[in-house]
Length: 111
Image (cartoon, rainbow, N blue to C red; front, side, top):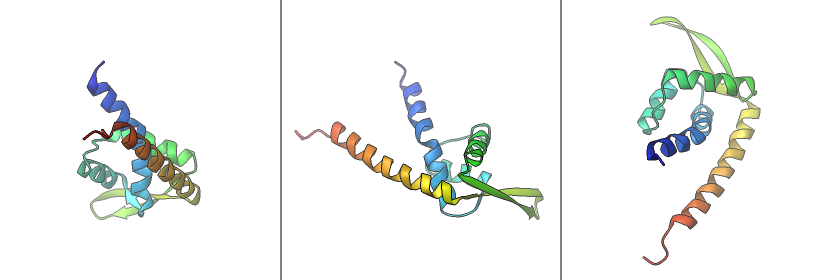
């Protein structure tokens, strides 16, 4: 088994949740999402982010609007929809349950 492959799969498994959580805080530009993920040490490239944003939008979890930019062409800003907020709330519950379970299983009670 390759540890890098397992680590990558674990990160991929929580990426959509993290993206929804970021967008759930307020309307945001895609490059700012990448910046926040990098600051949290969850490295994502544009080639990964944009297809994910598109899938989340097509599922009805995200909306976007175009804004003029003083630095170049208009920018697409993403926001979470009511359906997306409900989905994020369910993911929050799932994460709490899962992290609690993993902590129970990985904590050594003999220490």
